[in-house]
Length: 162
View 1 (cartoon, one colour):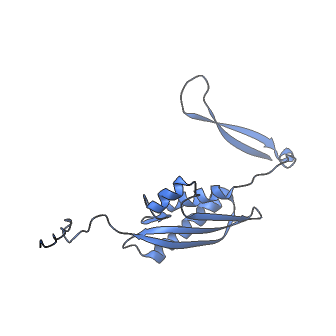
View 2 (cartoon, helix red, strand yellow):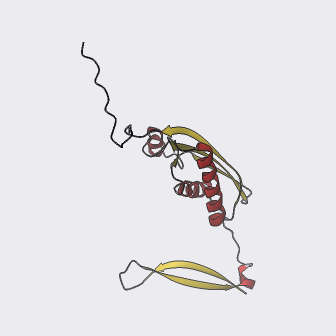
View 3 (cartoon, helix red, strand yellow):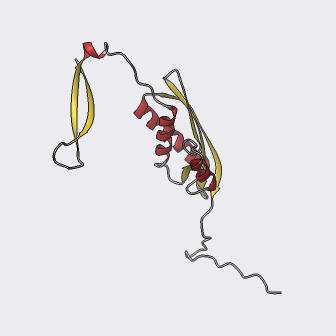
């Protein structure tokens, strides 16, 4: 039995940016003898969670796209917009996520879709068990322009001139 480690290396001499896949085989008897380990940073789990939320329509990490809070968070080096991961014993993770949702979306449904998408992505990419995922909706995003039936923007009435 062998353990295969795959890594990507750039093609040499061709100048192309296409990556060629190389495979290194380590006999199983040696794989157990190699010292060291793999640990996953909480920020990596937060990035995975943020990316997984992109598959759920109408819901956004933090305060939504372009919100002042998310811009300030980025400016001051905050972690993934309202997502906090805690890893215990390198085996399980708990996540707290603050989210914004588009007006008109059913919040419990979208929240549950986020929880499922994040749990699947974290498990698939890290092998960590998700102990809990808390989703807190902190903002509702209103449409930029009010629409009336027929799809035309609603005109605001001018204030009376005194």
